[in-house]
Amino acid sequence: MGWLMMSDRDVRRVEVLAEIESGQLKVSDASGILGLSERQVWRLLDRYRCDGGGGIVHRGRGRPSNHQISKGVRELALELVRLHYHDFGPTLAAEKLAERHGLTVSRETLRHWMAEAGLWRTKAQRRQFHRPRLRRQCLGELVQIDGSEHRWFEDRGPPCTLLVFVDDATGRLMALRFVVSESTFSYFEILAAYLRDHGRPLAFYSDKHTVFRVARKDAKGGQGMTQFGRALAELGIEILCANSSQAKGRVERANRTLQDRLVKELRLAGIDSLEAGNALLPGFMAQFNERFAVAPASADDMHRPLTIDDGRLQDILCVRERRYVGRQLTLSYERQRVMLVENEVTRGLAGQYVDSYAFADGRLEFRWQGCALPYTIFDKNQRVMQAEIVENKRLSEVLAYVKQMQDAMPAPTVKSISERNHYEKRGGKRRGRPGAADKHAAAKAKPANVGVGRSTAPTAPLPGPPQH
Image (cartoon, rainbow, N blue to C red; front, side, top):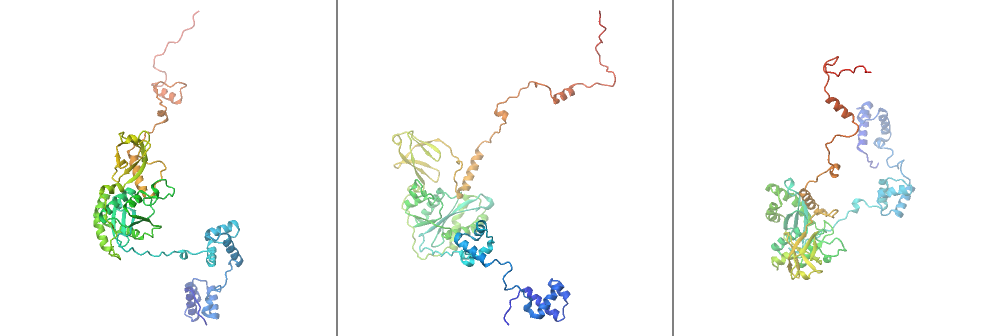
């Protein structure tokens, strides 16, 4: 006799039926234990006596279901899927089979058929395993950079962004800085500090943020580079963009660790502002690197010394653009009208192009062949344009600026239609037939008669008979 698979319920029934056969239990008591009627218990007892414990197993086990879909319908559905819906998922394929072919099959049934026929792979089968990338060999060979927007000060301050520079070879935090949001100027500031402290690395590894990469292929200016990319090219540093967040997992994992450890350090120190947070970061980085940084495979340091002075570095780490000078020595910059002061140099620049230098500290200069030009702002119109395209990482900064501008505007005065039409109310009496309200007011103004019967007020004499 072979093995027979039984469920826990069947095993329990066999035990109770055996107790009935041995006289230890009555059928009425067994029906209460098993939750069955006495007639059903008697049926099971007859099967137990004839076939033993195997007779308790459901008779339909191993047999096809009475509601099973025929083999022909299955083959037809799979053939239609192969011909017309080979790249469809089971849900959409089931909808199209019912809509276009009148063949109604549940999506789970169709999913099972397609998986068995090799037309659909389950989620576990579609999973891709990425081969881990080995660390670089030397310090400064590749530095991963990213910005992490988070409530770093919790409820003590507004949310902000932490710019993170992590060395790929060692996992060391090379630079940290709290900023309002990711922008070109914020990256220029942290890059300047990084270059002064460590020198120039071989390459930076970033995501596809527009600070690092030109999103539009048909961009007119910039020669295919952003302002940050242009600055790195002048410094001799390569910029590489990752295809996915997993590719730059070193800095992504560092962000996750910082969102736990750094937040608690800021809480313990009671810090609630960007300035105080940036003052804490150097000490935190030293402790973090001592605990988590690893030794590189090679002892060589690939950082190159910074061989330019601070003035030249500021000219590189700025936003530079070319601007056309009109016949009136005016040019447009950031929705502002700029007028060059007329002198011997600017007088001949009408119809020429000049270079604008916008620095991170707010300074703005216009130069022609390296010579700074005097200018004045003719018309200020700083505002957020209607329907302006705003990146997700700059949304918090833009909304804060919009709120600041709205708070500075005077409260609007709401006028009624009469005030807009310059209507003036006159004090004259109302003309026309008196209404019910006028009659009621006039009746209340008359004095009431005193007493009952003949009035005591003097009356006019009655007229006498007519005289002939």
